[in-house]
Length: 166
View 1 (cartoon, rainbow, N blue to C red):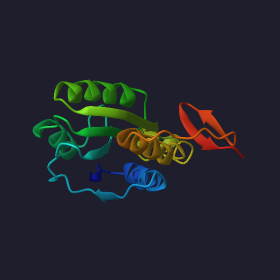
View 2 (cartoon, helix red, strand yellow):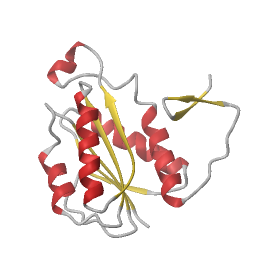
View 3 (cartoon, rainbow, N blue to C red):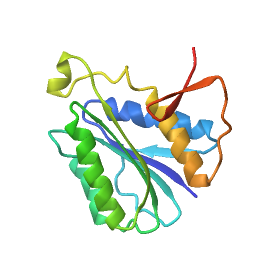
């Protein structure tokens, strides 16, 4: 099984998320190929993390193309995005429904909101929520490989993801 992280980022936030997700995949024992090349064709049994910023309720056109022009039947898929408003998460849920109709096995979605006054100009910061990206990568990789994660008393739950206790 191959693990691919495909992303497009106009402001750099989604790129940061992609590299943080890769850290989580490596922590789970996987090796990911990270790229912004959207010409990769999905194969049954592969695991894909596909991410884009949500710009005024739209995904990057090349990410939309890879999602809707390819056959995703039997392919394990996780979606991630960065957005300035809550409507980005709603948009990702609608994309998730469409991908399920195309036969993709959706393992999870992650939408991180940017913060700061510049988020209105698509230049917000992800620093507050970025810790969730590696946990997402680890969780999805474990789920894809059917691994059970040992519960540790040193960890606490935050919004469904694990974060090391300070």
